[in-house]
Amino acid sequence: MADPLDYLPGSRKVWLGALALAVAIAFGVWQVHTRARHASYLNRMLGCQKVEGVAESGFHFQEEFASKPFRWTNGQGKLLVPINRKRPPQGIWVCLEALRPQAMPVNLQIMLDGTAIFNGPVPPGNWEKTLDLTFHTFSDAAMIELRSATFVPGGTMNADRHPDRRVLGVQVKGIMLSRDDG
Image 1: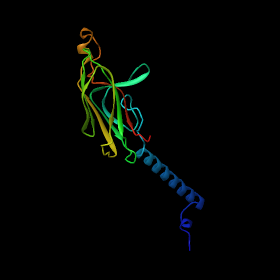
Image 2: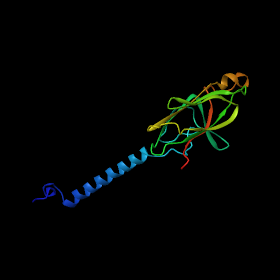
Image 3: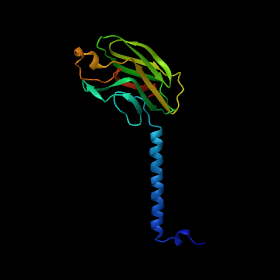
Image 4: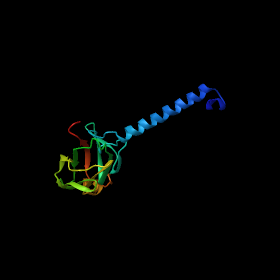
């Protein structure tokens, strides 16, 4: 029986090499795709800086204080975090700063996939809380939302001479999804 490769132009080694290369490339693409789908965002600092693979909206540019990153929300900060359903998070840690010119509490709502997991006042200054997520059934991604009251520094501080005209919600120092078994 004749070999089909004998009918193609070029040598047999060239065609076998090309076939091997195509298989290797396909395997590499499959590996990258599989890793991206199952990448773990557990124990990674989110919200205070951009993280590749996490879609976001409602955050201003990254700033730093004492060499630590933070970002202000515009009152509607949202993070769409890919979830490995084989190892879903069991908790969420939120660290933020509620700053206002009058040093008053800020109303905050933390939503997970449209359900409020925290709803209440946050005192002025640094605030952190760990919330239980063991009740939640996760899909391939989780939508984390931080909804808060807002203010404009330029309209309320330094006798109305402050140059910052952004609408600010809360200052996010970090959000971390966690799981007890690592």
